Image 1: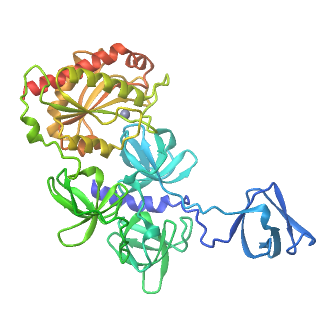
Image 2: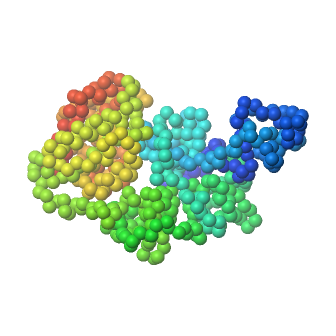
Image 3: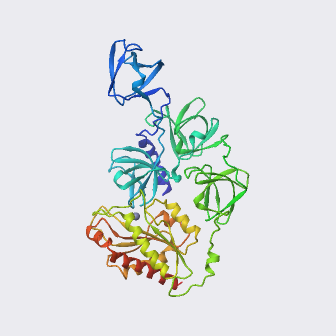
Length: 511
Ligand SMILES: [Zn+2]
């Protein structure tokens, strides 16, 4: 699996860089024509002859500015345009956008074409960084893969999520270092993805940073050669220690799960420098957005995401130990904490039914009904969302960890390009989750009228990253018109939530 990925990487790298990401103009002497048409004159004044004209929106690089006039190159000769009819070009350092897959098994391809090779697949709700766009296709970076997905199957999230924030290139000072984090990375002549490739650098190699321009870094990649690389594909380190803006009192956070990543920068795309285990205390130096800057035992500084730790100062974690003191009563859910995860939300609509049903709305309605049933049976219920808002998959998992839930139930509705496909499916990722999946699927099969597609293993982030007993249910296909009609009824939701409740009850009673 891994070697296959590396093999493909060479292909991706050679096909990816078609689009331009950085719009920042290095020269800075650019203006945009902001009126319908303006004259180009042979000198800086209205009395000079007109030698041409420029249309609205046209961007021009100017050579000099004299009073109210800008000197431009006009087909090899000097021309002048009135600066009051232009606007300075916006500095458009494009922040990467996050895209979310609306479907399971979304193909990530080597090039923007349906016939190109498949590199990897994304499941519904998983996020990728958008790196470009070409017609119906969006270029993305996903788990280190760079490829293309069809626009129809993704949703763009308004603000970049913290998981995909680029390294703070603009903050890295000169004389800091850039370490490559992808297997192979092209070095280009200019800070532009369409610029000529002049070399290649590799994973783990570290270079002195000569200059930073937008998302590009100029490095010395061999004795005499310099070039530009895209900053997302590496991390910065070295003499770029910033003064932290606030100096909080000595404080600690507690790690929630084993193998928690401690990173070199406040971004999930940066290097993992250490792994911490559940219960480890980390000393906070400062807070940066959704990250804590921490001090490691060896004295070095690193970062940990806020959503994977608990803040000891104000949120004492409810541990499994204290909870288990409450007695389990057979036939009820007393003493159990169940997380209900309503799939999608906010900008991430999930799939859309043939009759226009939004998956995100249906999952929330189902979650609310399930919540009331589980509470009535005595359970403590944690909702990963209870409004139509976007919640990242990692945050959903972290909520389950924070509350040490006994079960994590993720609710989804399915879709397939083949509209004849119907039925419900219960998924698990780890073998330890299979028992819960089987019990809930059995409960569902006893209450709903849909085709039982059974219990199936699949790689879902909310299950894979989950330390709790977690399952994901696809409650029927919105892509089948007849099934969509059933799924949107109150009766179906009653049956489905009763089935899930029954499955949970049987599972815990049999333990
Ligand atoms: Zn879904």
